[in-house]
Length: 246
Image 1 (spheres, helix red, strand yellow):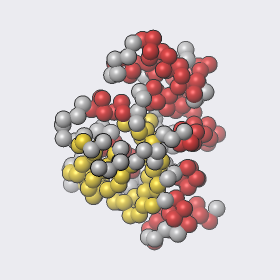
Image 2 (cartoon, one colour):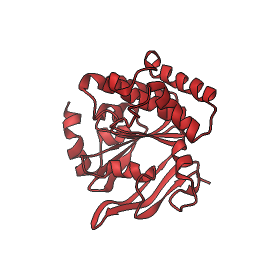
Image 3 (cartoon, one colour):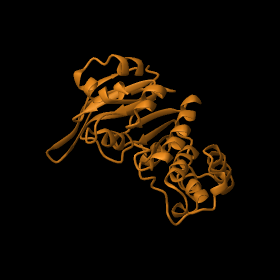
Image 4 (spheres, helix red, strand yellow):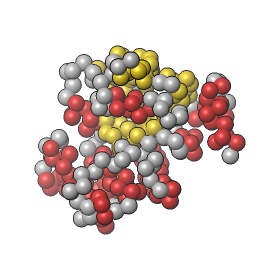
């Protein structure tokens, strides 16, 4: 029996005649930090949305602890609680305080009591440095703060895996570091993460695995040492050339 938490098997996704993903295959094991890199439009975000059932794969399978999640037999909300997602646009509820944003999913999906949800929310808001802002509304805090709240909200659901969809792309440059610092510390603590990112230093320094996508296909995957120092494919070398020159 595989020790994988998540297996993506021959996954493809089309929108009409436009094939966005083709025969995607990889495995995520406990403690892995898998960075998915590639140019915009290569299918990276669609892949995460398929994994989290926000899009339905056209063919192939997503297997969580040995069970298909695209078969229709798995409760999507219960699955998403275990495979949390952090979006580039934060997706916070604007009419709720920071604290309530981190409590609502626990109460509605996990059926936790208000007291337990409050305790858990506070734990993770303090963990990401947002404890002083629990009564603020999203419009009152910066983009970097919003993303840290979004990470705390995902952590409060006690996920086994966190999916990050370009978590720094909507941030001003000076705010990128504070979000990456939180992600680095989660990786150091053993959080299993699947990260779509343009932050090549993060992919090189923090990842256990790197997946390079181009035109909806995985062209190459491997450890960060091999991928960044001696990639096998010319397409990978071309993509990484500017970064490696720096």
